[in-house]
Length: 247
Ligand code: NI
Image (cartoon, rainbow, N blue to C red; front, side, top):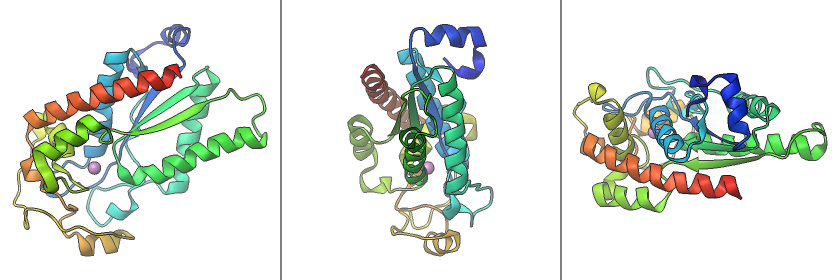
């Protein structure tokens, strides 16, 4: 169930049955010569909707712009500063908490969001702990990266081995191909497996990873593999959501 396709009365009725909500969060950033700018938001969104269908959970609108300062050397990439994203996340959680939501399950599609999500959770808890929000409901937030579960890990290993890499991965590109077959791209990738390493700001990133990829060969992506990865992720995350929200 998607929040933006409900009425307010339907949301009130849902709150009689569950206090949990899934919030997909991604990024709008380059994903190499064959990956869509929206890859991270698309992956989080389609998997969140699948989990919502499996579990009956409400799914909030996708937070499509994340913390991606290191990608700004490539056209089309957008970022929120960490401090901006923390404010956005706090306001979204507090808006929903006002109505009685208590379990906020962030389904994340972008590694660059992880530190900021953790900081946002700490800000939300700190407001309660310090006493600024004395009447606030006890809430809990959880961060779940769609690729961090045994099923997806094993399948990505089987499909791509070391060519999975860490940015513009064949796994995430495959899921976008499954979701949007009309937008499948092809382009030469040289070298086929991109270099690895760390990075600091956008200029440093562009110097080290000239076509945007890190350690990956997304030419291996297919929509069929994307379908398998999608189903593996939905099954694993639905289980995780249900046990967490019940706990
Ligand atoms: Ni990505």
